[in-house]
Length: 326
Image 1 (cartoon, rainbow, N blue to C red):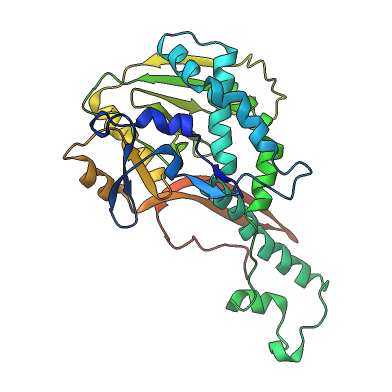
Image 2: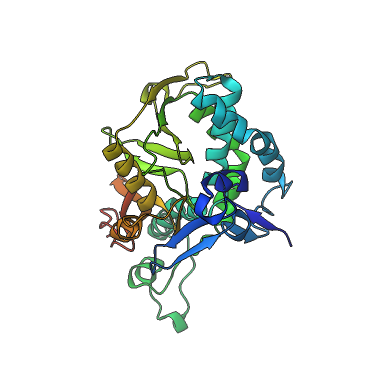
């Protein structure tokens, strides 16, 4: 079986360290703080990870990767030179969408709304009397009682939301390409951008309905993808007619803030291209965070309204109480 990379090797190689001969990068694991050097081929890979049997063409995402991976370095150079045009936007948006669909984080986040939705649907069906009587060996309890006491749980196969994401990946690229981007040029040689095993970091937006995406592309280049609420519900085209951008040179303090976002959003491993005394403590300080989905179900009549939003919060933080469950 192939070892499929959910973060493209062409991206990871851009973070190779000169003190490692330009052939490896530094890595630090969030769970235990262990540091180690690694090559792009060693990390961010899953055996047969890009094969999805829910799809009629199980390896179709590999064909999509061929559209952006060979042009990744070219697109980064174009952004740095101010040559921002639709082909460049497609390559970078394609990389971001690929990570969101194929990474373990993406699959986990895609499963979260279903994990919240299915028990509520089951309880509504129970209220309507659509289930058979629970057998005596289960205590003759209702489905709702079994769910509430934790005896009945639902396990979502992460490959299913992955399949949905892959099937709709062109829509993700189209959306990203019609949003506003901040092109972030890093001129601070002692403070490069980090990357991670989920380099599509979540940045809080002033509008709680949406979140920005911070995507490090090289140690000296990143983008901030800012959703445009006014485009909600509109049919968007892959010509990216709504695309806009601003080129920015963040201060060192702003680079550190962006790196904090990248570290907090990482699933397990943070990668960086230099040895510096402040890096280990910086990662350790923010290691307890990760990206989560917060889902709220509000009872309305005999049904409910379900809303989800992506947030960064401490790992394993207890979920908020759901007002629908009674």
